[in-house]
Length: 126
Image (cartoon, rainbow, N blue to C red; front, side, top):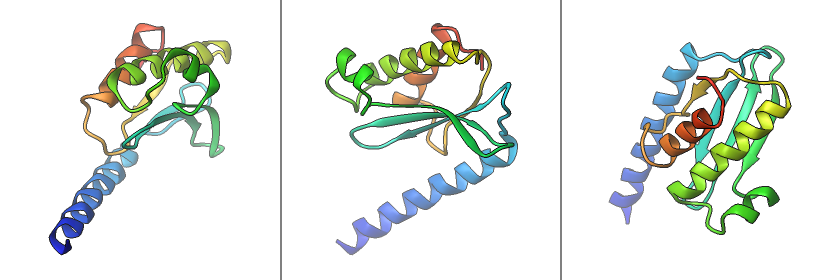
């Protein structure tokens, strides 16, 4: 049990280090907010953030009612694609077209990649 816990802590610390490195370079404004993606084991969350005023402009999650209508499961690539579509639609309604992508230290593959490509496909510019 001790080795497993140590391995999990090491993996989390690596992700946090990557996130800090990314955040030094990525900065969102009201015109071009930061799209921050977080993925858990069973769900995915995405936020559009204005770093100047430190406010969240838009937030979508696999917990949302709109998402539940499209997909039952929240922890797979199909769910990430559906979430990317919902994010792009809501961003267009708010007048947001361009974003800066922040993968929050997660590797750009799987669900993170599926969400980003779906948002691009539905009109967001990265």
